[in-house]
Image (cartoon, rainbow over all chains, first blue to last red; front, side):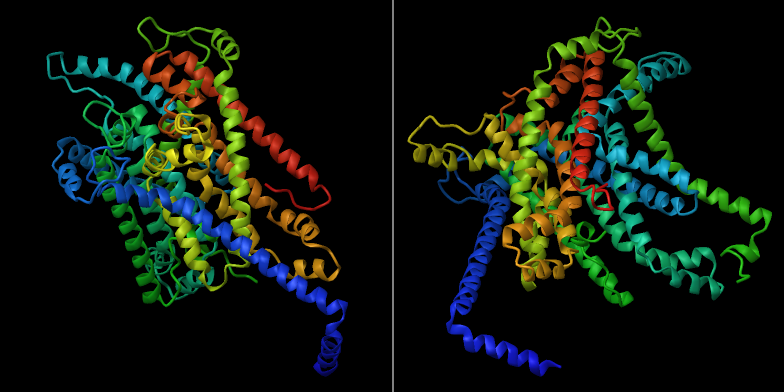
Length: 323
Length: 298
């Protein structure tokens, strides 16, 4: 079968010093040129994406007080940042908020994804609408709606609480703070985890679950030994995404924060509005190192899980590349 | 096939009740959150938008359309935001499309690494990545350099809409690349071969094969990018020095400073309406172009 084809190609090569041959060479050259253009564009985009991040890290080691002009190398700013009470306080607030948010959102989102498998199509579609709305509505609208809601609720509830406690100075009342920030963050992140886990569920191998049931495993055992390990990459990714979202959020936090619950982004935003200082760069560098570290830990967990179950466990990148 | 459904043989009355209880328990927390922190607050905003400002800020019940009238009279922030978000979406698309195409078809064996390198900025702090441009564009660095190139020492990019646009493209680029990459990656390469065999040039192949295939990703990416750009607050504040007055600024001003909640609520309602209309028109426009095809992009 292939012999005639080869001889046909041979013939065309033999005729290669003709016009057609030159056209082929030109096409080849053109292809190389276009490939070069694509590579150049890619290199430029990656430079564009990474240059500013690198610059922040570099300028965290800058001896000059003016953060935008390089004069010499120092690590002093890290020490100064770590002894700054405000930085430490807001870092602590951010960590508590991001962690509580990630735990709650991961639990709620995973539970809802599992629950939605067991309801009618109509209920599921209704849920989908809410999930997408919570993700698609701009952050700032969610933020102001939450503010309005909490403020109005507190206006009603606090007088009742006060009268129940019989007045006095140290009346317990509801107010803005860590609680309201977490509540607002959990909404968005629950939807995020829900979508990630559901995508994984829909791509899951049902035969394993059925085999497990046929072998008389209890539903709980089937979940623990079959379903959960398969969902783990999505759950880990959801947890990490929720954590980073919350740790980084400015807009929602700015609306529903209260006295004493300044978070790191609020602190950084305030600093940057007055001009970038090397201390801010040092704080930013530590945050970047922490985030990338977390990403690597997540990646390692997934790799370990993949080896343990003999399956490719997916990667952090796969949340955006597989659907 | 006489086999009963999965729970069949053991499904007694009690079992079914327990199963329904479990379903309810699994859905309960998310349902509470969706109801109390999405449905109810959104309803509050709609109701408030017809109300009046209380004396010391906040809201008094009323029914008037005054807030909407006032918003329509001062529509500048909306127009500014629409302009910037549209330009930002288009620019992001222009930067993302070649890269996504490169990743999907030409990146070779380092593709995984290239994608990981896109994911990392996507995971790192948006706020830090935004303010980093203050240093990059600062007078001692690129800002002064560009000024020198233009022969204008007073040239400033920071504090202008140009800087905001740059920040928008920078911040949302990965969100555009990922959906484009996913659709292009699934493209049937034999279509391109066929097109070439039939004598189509590069441009014809791109326009008639690649672009239609990439269209769903293009639409998803544009929507994912356009919506947050419309409501963006951090980038205009930091890179634009808050000088360009956008919807985000207007909302923060109304809610946190002037405490005129009814007016702010009306603006929020209009913002959502504008976005719904823009996206519907966009999807309609894109779908119209491919009516011959059997699938819609959404």
